[in-house]
Image (cartoon, rainbow, N blue to C red):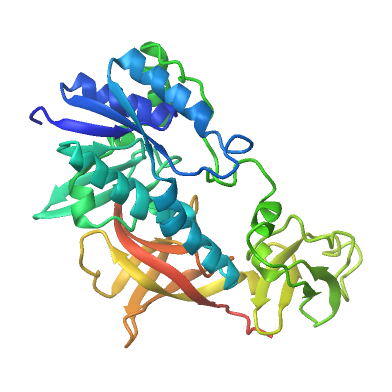
Length: 372
């Protein structure tokens, strides 16, 4: 590859740090940008101040310039507002997917182009390749770290201008390189979750922005067993924080499933009712098909109906499925094996082997067991 001007999103973590190092080793002109995406109460819960110090230290060791850019206003308008709208509607959005599409590969990409960049680079575990005149998004080579799920909304123009240097490596190799060259963050723990929530209790955070409308929690027999604080504060498959640990299922066999944990299985927005079931494999938690809209395809073209694999949540094994479209253009997926806790608002992402084709936002799911 000819020498290029590449702007790297330096987050303060080890993956983006090693990405910058690898690009510099290849002879490129590397400039670093640190993105600040959240301002509200960031000193208390968000680690952005610490992360910037780490990013600046890495830039110093690598001998590259770093610029601190504030995208907080863009983030609030394009990501956080949508995040709240979705929760208010009873769905569970994925802000990381939205942040990648709207901030990291839009606002950041635009800023980098203004700096005269040929390309941008991030520390995501994914790969990009050209095949048959098309740009493809591929899984990262480390199956335990692959992040293509979060990147599936990137379009061909964005992918064509993006590099993922660590996508070819395993995490252990990235850590080894970081230690070998003396990066100050070589042993820094991976960040989890999204910055604006940080380590705080999630329900407490949402409660600052969403109104609470308490209502009944019912089991599959229709028995009210507790009260919920508002449907927005619960997600399908949720086990913790239900406040019903001591309640036994009606008719449970002694010594059988009476102590099995409870899970959120349904949310009835109209009746403001939260339905829960006992046991991880309860039929209400399984879905054999889903519909998704707001589709986005990495190649720019919708894949033909047929047999593929899909993920309905991150860190899930690829599941064999059949793809079809309805008259309105919505995507329908039917699964060979029922999927657990398929959640409206989350992303259904389609794969053809290692190629991430894109996907959409889950609108509804059908369970093998009929809903009450």
